[in-house]
Image (cartoon, rainbow, N blue to C red; front, side, top):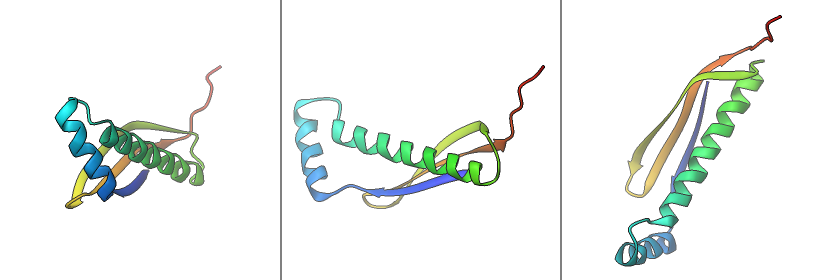
Length: 87
């Protein structure tokens, strides 16, 4: 199973991030972008798993790649499974 999203940083976001690097170590604008991209990829992965009849995902991982300057792909992937309660 996989869920993939591609995100880009806006000009305004880049400007805000540049200002944050001057004053603070944490660049919260990029942190929020990463959080949103990861959540979106995770949700897409869960939807794909459910569409296949799975009710769980094991061995889940994230991967990210820069596809072009300012454009990042985030991939969430794992193995779709059907989990049953033991008696």
